[in-house]
Amino acid sequence: MELTAEQRKEEQKRRRFIANAWMLMEKTGQAPAPSKDYCQLLVTTEGVMWRWWKISLRRSAVVYPGEWAVAREDVEDDERLMGEIERTFGADVKDQVIHLCTRSNDFLSKLPQKLLVKIASYLSLEDVIAMAHCSKAFRRCCLTDCLWRNIFLQHHKHISPEIEQLAAEHTWRKIFFTDKLRLQMLMSRQRTQMKLQSNDNEIQNKQVVPINGKEEIAAVEP
Image (cartoon, rainbow, N blue to C red; front, side):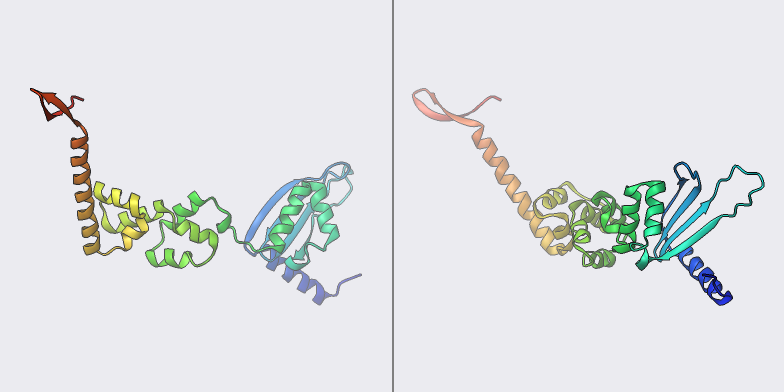
């Protein structure tokens, strides 16, 4: 059916809108025999653009490139588009296109946690706390010890061995939010425990041996 001038104008406007949206995926390739047409697949946040350049062996043939656009909500039901994508790029690409157009485009939560932690380390403290409330994946990322070690280092510039030991016992997040007085108390308690442990080790390195009929304590040679 022939389109009116107004309909063609609206169609061109819709195509530009889909093509200029945020790009999610782009693939180019050549269709299998017998057509051998060159094709381009563009998947954006607003839909799918399918472009093709027909190959003709006849010199007299005038071949123009073509394209059509499908809105995001109509992609899965467009059998012609799905058939062309599968024929040219395979079933895996077709499934990927359907996934991009029918599901939430939350790519950050799908990143490896190591990379998420790296990204979060550049955020401010307020943003990290806000990020933890976005999803379960972000919350797991924002509670990792290595992230809070980086945050602690950004605010204190130096980490002593005593702080390292305390963090191993209480986590870096708890150490970061502990006030200075409480932190000093924990460090003092840690020094006392280390001193007691050192004394216990010295006692254990001694044994009772008989000397001149009496039992006395003598140091055991290591």
